[in-house]
Amino acid sequence: MQGSNAGRADASPLTRARWRLTDAADTMLSALFPGRARRLTPYIFLIPAFLIVGVIVAGLFYIGDSSLRVLDRSTFLQSEDYSLENYVNIYERAGYRSVLFRTFSGTAIVTITVLLLSFPYAYLMVRTQSSFLRKFLLFNLFLPFFLGQVVRAYGWLIILGQEGLVNGILGQLGLANISVLYTNTAVLIGLIQYMLPFGVLMLAPALTAIDSDIEAASEGLGAKWYQTLWHVVLPLAKPGFVAATVVVFTITLTEFAIPAILGGGTNDYVANAIYDAFFRVSDMGAGSALGVVLIVIGTTLVSVLFALMGTGTVGFLKEDK
Amino acid sequence: MFRAAPFRIAVWSVVVFNIIFLGLPTVVIVLASFTAGDLLTFPPEGFSLRWYERLLGMRDFREALGRSLQVALFCTLFAMPSGTLAALAMVRYRIRFARTLQLYFLLPFTVPLVVSGIGMMYVFGDMRVLGSLWPVGLATCAINLPFMIWSVSSAVNRLDPDLENAAANCGATPLQAFFTVTIPALMPGIITGALLMFILALNEFIVSIFLVDASIVTLPVWMYTSIRNIITPDLAAVSVVYILFAIVSIFALDRWVGLDIFLKSK
Image (cartoon, rainbow over all chains, first blue to last red; front, top):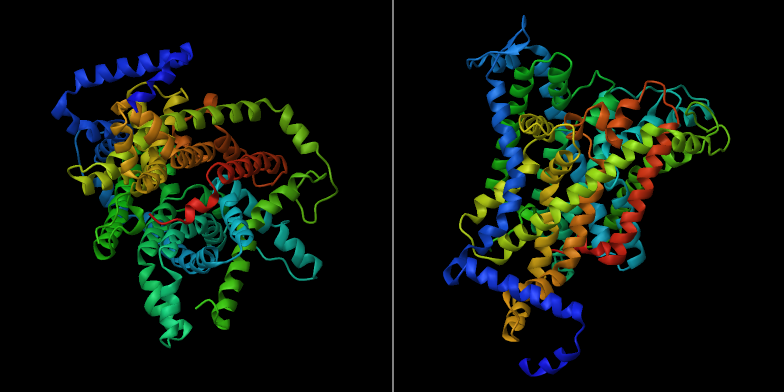
């Protein structure tokens, strides 16, 4: 390529300036990191992302600290010395126990339902011969995915409300109104619709990785469709199911807007209880302790899943085979 | 398997249900925003653009939208370089403690958002930067960074290392090779990640609610605090603004990189 330098003679001044700039930067770089220091390159690449995630980690220390300090109700300041009182309170207060129970049982229902609904959608999207159908399914998936919780909860408010779509239709048919809004069912409907795109998007790459010839081979050997599904496709799709479970579970577990808007204040999840502790009763210690409990239980469940099944398609690294 | 009739019927019935289930809130919001009535009822009372007119006249709305766009821009500007470099380092190079680092970079997903939000409220409060918009941008970047790293790392996985070697062989310096070969090859991943980060930040609610006050309220927070027991159609018009942003992003994504990229395996 050195021979092609003839072309450089008629390069524009701007291009020349750019060459000089790159050359200068290169000289500087090799002066700063001579020879062996090149090994540090990947670690230097990691610094910005490390620092950005570090803000979250730093926040965790504040929360851990705050969770060990008890609120003095006369001054509304946190105590100087540490105690486990906030944690004991969570365990003892029936209100917190029922919020935790509602959150975890709701999250389990949402995760299972989303997995069941995601698989056929992802499967059809990946396997269909029609590129129009694939585009349509992708579009229909991304439109809600790109809308936030508040917008989507508002949509359900219009559908499920007293004067809403469902009751409007029931009224036209001469049937009695139903009141789903502000119940746990409304929250679950909102959460399942919110999480469905996440489930499908986590599952789809795993299904793409399964060669359709493998399915054909299984059937060629006489397996019925349900045998192929159960013994071939589902086991091979495991990394996708792990990823979908983790993402759906962790996001649902900490949802705030949907339980707040569709639950009407009587179907709170842990995130709502934490928010209330901070901003309604100004008891930062109680809110922080609830946050720590949420992290500990959530991380334990995810780690158990990772340990049993591997990180699936959640990781950035290629899985060692 | 797909040729078996019972399986086809089962798949198609779930898919049709999903299509309606996913699309219904969006369709209902759009219809509701054109109502002529004061309250949201079904069927809507007549057709009018009055709620859009009202919205344009609302300073609160215009300012909140402007702030959300700024936050989304900050978020994207933070995420693009940091996420791209991190993905390159994680996938391209052999590094020590790769598995531990991977878990670290997945923390934004495993730490509950409400906890991240409160934690960052403490951190930014101590730094005395609460009340500006860039910390909100940084926070939205932190909680969604895995999306950026994912998008770019799948592009890095598809990148042929021989391309960079060829560039070096032809006399390119490391920086020249980086900017003229590596980065252009990763562009589909970078664009995908940047678009995701932008749209997620534009919609970000739970973390923002801890980091904004009345003077710098962002659009989702403004919308949330405006929801009352009586459902008025003005918020349907705000939602339609979000729907338009979503549609534009989807078409941009499809045009520049193709939506199919999300179906590819690593």
